[in-house]
Image (cartoon, rainbow, N blue to C red):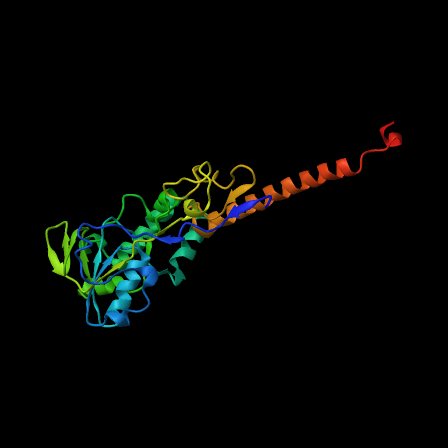
Length: 275
């Protein structure tokens, strides 16, 4: 038994493995990036990487370095930013700029720098979302990709870009643009999800659909009867830090109130003190 339960298993506790038409017909390996170790196992092979987030981009680069032939599936728009700007990390520079400028102004500066340093990614089959990278992160939790060299490989043709998969076939895949190609393996860079509904038998605070608190940020940290959640804000360490502070302060208030009540019952005032 415990007085309080803090759920801190995070948004990325379990691999997301999407279904594809014809997946049962594909006779080659299909694995999630959580099981990916090194591109050395795929040397000389044609590998289809599904997902164009940071994991998918870095897996493609690693495959290139180990002599494989990767193709990346881009199903949605994506923000790609340089890893560094003005000799500073892009993330660090963004946080510094946010001290002085609104989110949209910082986004405009980031996109201008990205266009100058990386060029027009839409021409490579990597269109950008309508919202800026930081605003999109705040609204949906979608993290921009920090380029570590993958974009140069795409420009050179070492990494091919393809649209969404229509279906898998015995030895390859058909894409939504009508093209079909052969592949020796599929790597799913399709992210992770919360697994809270699997082990926490409670349906009021956490959604069974996505495993996240039902109440939106910043109100999703506290449930009923001593139940709390930390790290489910889709706002990274900053969101987790805000959750942690609120939870610690709330538990402290509860604890002090209980101690005060216990002391009052344990040490009732004397008749002289009452008079």
